[in-house]
Length: 242
Image (tube, rainbow, N blue to C red):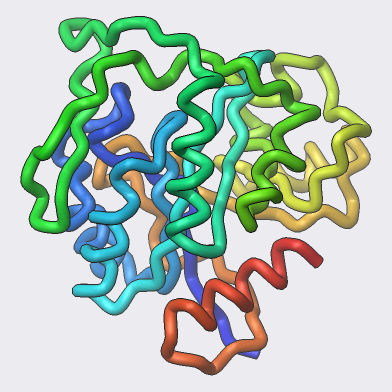
C-alpha cells in the first residue's frame, strides 16, 4: 500500500465563481508546490477544461482526474469523478440537455473560460454554469455510473448547497459510498450525528483560488506502485467504489 496525497475538488476559470488565474497549468503548478499526487478538476456542471487539465498535469507528473461539481434539481452540490477523460466528456455532452440555459452575467458572476493545453482561451461558456440542472439527487449516482464514474455529496459540512443543509438530514437513499468534507475537523461530529459510519471520508478544498488548494495532508492508501496515471486512477476508483 502507498500513500497518494490528493485534492479532489478544484475549480478552474471555467467556473463563474472561480478566479481567472485558475488556469489548468496554474492549477497543476500549484498542486505540484503543494506536493500533491492526485488532483481532480470539478467545475460547475462542465468538464470542458478537463482535456487541458490532463495535459497540464502531465507536465508536472501529477495524476489528473476528470470530474465536475453537479448541481442537482434540489440545488445540492455533488462531486462526479470519472475514471477516464472520455467518460467525463461523454457525461458533459449528455448533461447539456439537462441544464437550464440562463445567459451568464459576466459583470456579476465572472467569465467562464475554456482553455487549451497552453492556457489560451479558445471559447467561453455562454450560459451560467452554477444553477441547478433537472437531475435529481436520486438519479445522479446511477447516471454517473453509466459513464464509469462515481458520485457523492460535496462539502456536507457547509450550509451553501450541502446535502444536509438543504434536506435537513443525510438521506438513506440513494446509497453513497463516499462523503466529502470541506474541513476534516467536522467529520467526527457529522458522522456521529447523522449515522455515517462506514462511508469513505474525502476532504477536499473546493478551491476557487490558487491559494485555496489543500496542502499535502489528506491521502488515500492505494494498492498501487504503478507510475501510469491510468493504473493509479484504476486503483483510486477501485478504492472509492468498494
